[in-house]
Image (cartoon, rainbow, N blue to C red; front, side, top):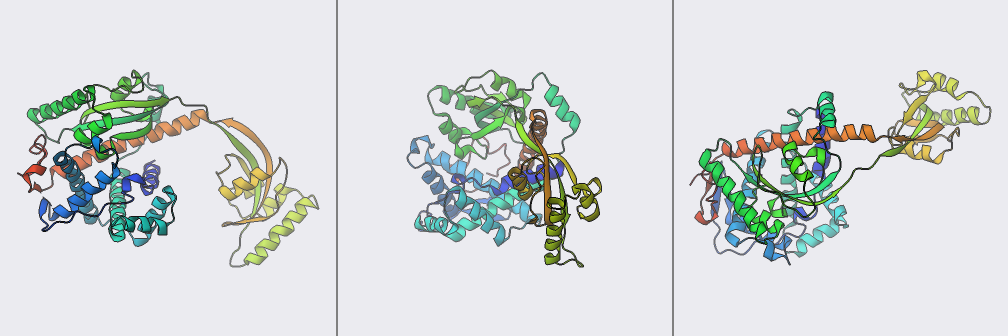
Length: 447
């Protein structure tokens, strides 16, 4: 399960959100002189870097500038994000995590596809905005680097057992369905004293009062939240109820769309949740096939042409001479998993043996034998023995529960990791107006 969670995290990591990657980042504001605004361990953050990042956020909210906080607060929020990114990049480099040009090319292809552009059109749009495409590539490289750091931290720390799944599904607090959430997070630094905890609670209550006073929730998230998604309005997207910590799920379960929760104390701080929408889970019915196959593979003794010809000869013996498929499979098939049972593949979902076989089976009728066709494994002959509709709701529910537990553990592990990373780092904000006076001392930031 560790590997499957890590694989899922890696798959999710490469799918970079189009809007969040500053598709058309603004050019840095012109400065007569640059200056260092923060020292992060042995590295520095320049005023020009901060200006560029702030300008990107402003461009992202073009037409909705009223949702942004005052400039000094926005700069603090953006600087905090840049500092956290820099710390993760440093840690990844220390661990030897490397991102190749090919990795970045693949990410650019994904961003382009999400924006319905070609890579060349994406490059043109970036450059038309006045930004450097090389800087855009570096931004993607940094994001992939951080995502791989996340994977390396989580994959050896998270496992899910069958008993945990059973306990979740049988728990009286287990709730099915999905919810669309937004949140505001006010973190409590590691090792914080009573005064720091009280300061965080006060900031959470201040945010809640602003929302009750009419401030848009997204604007309040930008203004008050210190979560990584703060500048995206705190939107968490759709999540299954079983992914949400039980302490929060009970509150969300009693809310209606549009409602906002009180400030809730969690393991890492205070959280304010907004239920945007909700929907119920439905039954999952899938088509399954029963089939058998003969596989002929090229080898050192069998050329590709000879493998193709042998498959054609076997098909002729089955279709025209009516020889027994199972007997021929036992005698000739090179598939180690099915040859001994006459090529029987059992019941399976269409993509279980790959898209090529799944698509071919969908074209056949029951008991029909396919013409020989080629895949990466070799030449196949298939016989579709039957099809059925199978209710996979219970199995899918277990799979989703496993993923939910893994996701929840992963988020907690990495959140703790970031808190430790920051608390053990040397961070010196050199510009007084960029210091967050509410949390600076507690977070271990140097004056």
